Image (cartoon, rainbow, N blue to C red; front, top):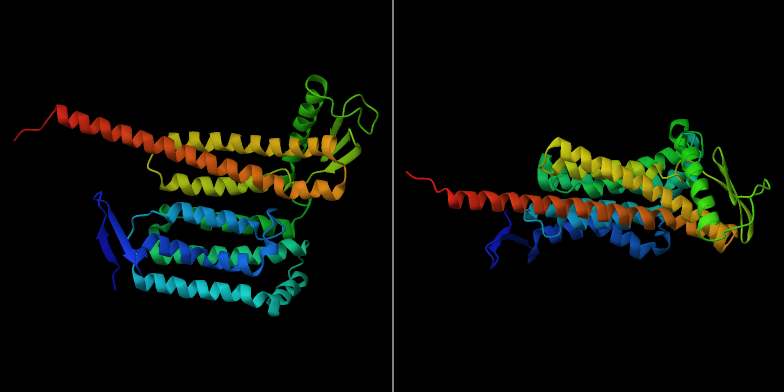
Amino acid sequence: MSSDKTVSSNGAEGYNVFGISSSIAATLILISPILFTLVAYPDTFILSWNEGRGGFLFAMAFIAAELVGLKYSLTKKRLLMVAGMAALTISYFIALPYGLSDYIRNGKDVYNVSLVDSWMWLWDFVVMAVFVASSLILLFGKKWYKIASAGAIYLAGSALILALDAFFPFDSLGPLQIVVPIYLQIDQAIINFVDTSIINVGPQTPNSSAEPALATGNLLLMNGLHGPFALQVFWPSAGVHSMIIYTLVMLAMLIKMDMPLTRKLIYFAAGTLGTVATNLVRIVSLSLYALVVTTDVQEWEAFHSIAGEIMFLPWLGIYLGVVIYIENKRIRRLQAGLTSGAASNPSTL
């Protein structure tokens, strides 16, 4: 059974099912498991990437951004099939407090899991990633990744990061830990520059030097306005997880954009530098928070748990929006040039 097709007043084709746009219907179905968990387990929506389901909110934003307003004919049959898959996904979340969560937790011993919490959240993101990707394949076919892949890739990337954290926590994954000392050395230089050139942030470091920050390996020693504070940094907190997420989401967007490879590489490189800068801003902010605001561990951890997401994800969204705006503007300019050229040089028979 095909969907009902209507034509809007501006001449653009729109597609309706169940009395609403098929793209909106698809969006509502795809985000329905997230909406269910938001209502059923609101306390689990903590923004920190490894402490709850806060990442679901950003996945929902990616899904809506790509699907809402999409002019694509989706059949009622396929939408109903996806709705059935959504019901199965919701049943997973319903079953968690009724024994399924304990079953998953018991798997930690079988698979030698190091961090149980990351192991537990991992399966939520795996289930959602499989559901969203399978639904998009069903709705759009083999070209789904060129239409609306960002949400599925974000969920899969989050699952990958949680898996790495569950099996290789702290500094056990050496290659990813390499960047930490570099970040901390830059952080030390920035903090000490701020202290000497902008505003006083502390008398000295715990080693009695004249500077408020001292980086050694993955350890940052500070002595600020509220006393000494030691910050030990591992690869997830250094922003490695955000770099992986950026890489996956950016590649998903660039794959479906029609532009020369050189332009894609330029956009990717610029976004990489921006992500590195965002990670550095986050680390410096965490240091300044301990130096200037408080050395209370619980208060600092509360800020640390949300600092990454409130900086990285807005940056990613803004950067993707800027790239899309620039490319759309370029395409319109090219189309306008072709139109004016055709008008000035009409063909003759």
